[in-house]
Image (cartoon, rainbow, N blue to C red; front, side, top):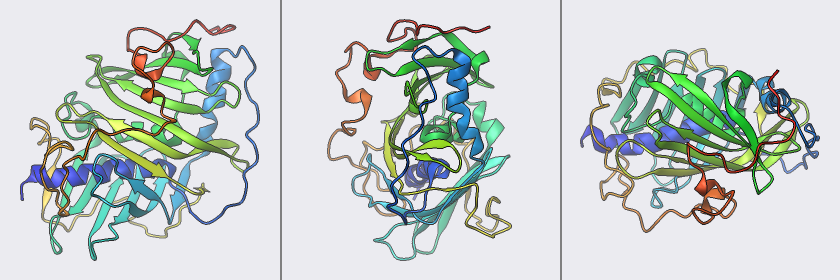
Length: 352
């Protein structure tokens, strides 16, 4: 089996990991959550918006022994069960299992220097894909994983807003959400990030990321937000994401969580955030950067775990996803471009 075929399933798992790494939870309790407090007035300034969004700084660790990931782009793949541990800024580890294949497992992780995902090629052989963070970030046309893992962490609930990075002025959308665009410098050029903020409780609902050449490379929508009173943060319990590699069709997935363990790791492993070193089958993603899409979700390639990646039809996001609205509809996320806002300036915005 070729590296490109193996990378397909590996990528799905990685994205799931990165996704899971940020918002994983412990599915144990149906205890009702208190209502989030109102933290924004009708005309917040940019610093008040940033203060509301950046409450997630209180979350330095997230951990779970139970999470569910649904890879929407590959309907033949069952939901994955996983354990996840996260420690900011870039340390995370996910070990996932595929219920229908005994012995098959996925190991995904990151530390401050590198990230990796290990997937089974056969029942007895695994392949480890890995890359150095800085080297991978320097590549604009990433055919396998189009965004840095840190963006995926933001997308599932731990986003930040730096007032000094804001482009133009925040605007009030027709759906009531506040839209803010920011610049994101990188070694491959300056990206543009767009966030939608809930207007009273101040949490992020949507993220869009545009590359330096103005391509949409990633977007997410979160829902089922719940207030964690102990940490004073609002965290989403359902997140849908789409990534758009430089080559091949989009990658779509949904993460569902039940409850979070905040600022505690449910693992005593001293090597928790260390990349496995014993696997002789290693592939450096930086060296693979020039190749095309590894199979792709719209192709008929067979992944490393034996699943066909052929799609049974177009991916239809859930009704709560703003991009399901008609393209061009005023104020819809689908109508957004990197070059124009979707609403009038928000009253009261100031920068001094």
